[in-house]
Image: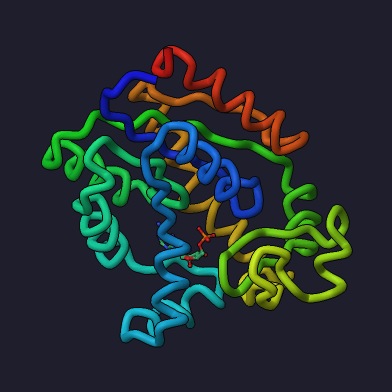
Length: 223
Ligand code: AMP
C-alpha cells in the first residue's frame, strides 16, 4: 500500500468478528488497531477509577459515556504509532462520537474515515457469542464449536493462560448489547452513507472470506 494516511472504521454489532478482522487489517496496513473495548477492559483489569466505573456499565451491556470514550481515543490517536492513521474497532458507537471523531481527525491532520460495516443476521450473532471464549492474557478469541480442544484444557496455546467466557458475552448481556447496537450504533450507517465513505459487506462465512470482502471494499485506497 502507499504511505498515505488512512483511517478505517469497522462497524458492526457485537460478535460479527470486528476485532479479529481489525487485527488482521492492522498487520496488513501497518497501522495500529484501536479497540475502545480492549482499552476499557485493560482499565478494568488494572482496577483504575475509570475501570471501576466502566465495569458496571459494560456488564449491563450499556455504553460508556461519549466524553470518556472520545477523550480515550484522542489520547490514543496522539501516540506516535498512529501518525499514519488507525483501524478503529468498536468506535464510534454513537452519532455524537462520530461527530467528535470528524473534528478530531481534522485537528490531527488525518483524512476523513473510510467505513466498512460488517453485517450478520441476529440469530447467527447470538449463536456465535454464546460459544465465544477469550484468553485472559492475550485476548485471543476461541470458539467452543470449532476449537473444542483449547477450550477443554482451558488454556491458551500461546502462553498457557486461562480461557474464559467474557462477563458481557453471557446471554442476557448479549441481547442487551444487540438492542443498544440497533438503537445507538445502527444510525451511524445513515450518517456515513450520507458522507459516501461507507461499504456494507456480509460477515457470514469464514474469517478469510470476510477478510477478502473487506479488502475488496477498501481496494481503491490500497493500490
Ligand atoms: P466491545 O469489546 O467493543 O464489544 O466493547 C465492550 C463494551 O465496552 C461495550 O459493550 C461498551 O460497554 C463498552 N464500549 C466499548 N467501546 C465503546 C464506545 N465506543 N462507546 C461506548 N462504550 C463502549
